[in-house]
Length: 610
Image 1 (cartoon, rainbow, N blue to C red):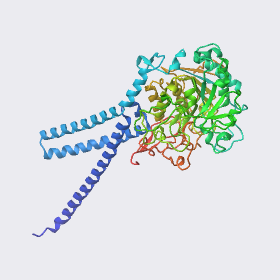
Image 2 (spheres, rainbow, N blue to C red; image 1 turned 60 degrees about the vertical axis):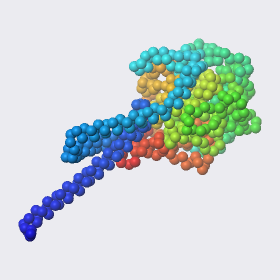
Image 3 (cartoon, one colour; image 1 turned 90 degrees about the horizontal axis):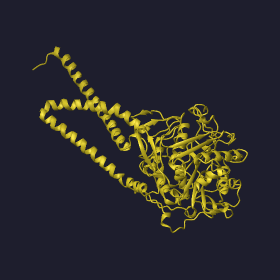
Image 4 (tube, helix red, strand yellow; image 1 turned 90 degrees about the vertical axis):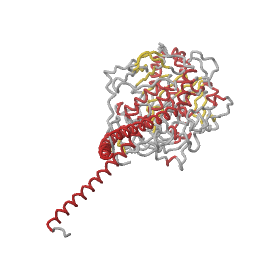
């Protein structure tokens, strides 16, 4: 049968429309399926990484995943459901539709329940261990306080906190006259001026800061009584070990080791002089005061400025003269560290200097850290165990926030601090923030915008390591961006019974509910927040020249091996103005996010770049 020539244009037009519709429908279907795939991956990633801690939803990666879910998953699910129901209407009965829907709901319930049970069981061993620690004590004092909407909570803390009027008291003393460094050296390399010289750190001002801080911490009216309150049971001949921080004695681009001559911040002799002065005032002999850092060198320029000549020094190798090498010969089983994370097979022991000491004073430096996020009093004790000064070591994977083995629910550093030779002996913590480091753990003294472009010129006093680290954490976070995951170690430590953790209410008032925070100004009286004009919000436009921090860990990490240290490109460098959080192990985002120095803000997401 011959076709009608007049019908051919109509036929061709109809076929073109059908093909165009089919092509459009196919493209639309592909786009819907791609959107669903992005959304569902984001959904399960969000569930897996958030776990049982809703507070993690504020993390930048979680915020990006939520954005992806709202943009891709919800609309695509609605469209797919519409298409699926339309298909079912034409091919199945109403009863069959209901049966399929019920089966789908049951399947989803089984998947979610299985994941929940697995996640709960995976953290059970760690939780049980920490519960045993809390129950066995010896946590000598508890405090009753109102914390948020919950009142009359009982908080355990470290044994020596019982000597304080408030178990979780933290005192900060600020005096802008403590240092006068003019920041002549702002990068690596030799520096002709030593930031710790008496020309730049006023010993008299530091002594006065100690007087004010110790009196406020203990509630005593004289410095002698304050030191006696910290060591009420001290007996003649007992040894007090002071854990100092010389992480940067092997970094900085100058001479490394005992002749360190760069400007990277290490322990200050004036702070230690004030401590020794207080100890000798209550009858402690100089030879019974031991200054140590297991994994680094105690430098010449530090030792020659210690005003007491009979104190003993211990470090990683000893200099054959006035510095003795640390040893690890104790046969006491308690010298071994017990790790709660069963996937970490590290084997470390406490140095003999701690085993033989009767008391410990921990003196960390307030710094941010490129790998671990923060390095404060808890992390300072990585420099109290063996195996962290020669070659690379696997603990990086468990404490560096973006590494594959990092677990927000456990931390080897917390396990170290739970060792009885540290937990039961730590009588005092002095946080050194005269210079500090807001951008990195490897840095010369820096200008802080929140301290009128000067050094912080602060000292922190406390006994609760979690509480004092929480306060220093807030000061670091106020100055600039700190990876939110940096807070994980404080939460784990608090859950383990090492103290209490909370964040202050805001940068201006700086108030806590459980932590008893006391601020003292240069006049020796408590600071009136309403008149404090130097605590301004940091200017994000300043200090934009920071480099990626050296991925050495605080005080205790290995001597850099050029073949390994420089290759750790996965380490998060939160001080950069631009950060690609997609790099790293499972701890990082799989979606590109943009983050800028300053207060954490909602990240800009590029959800298709993963």
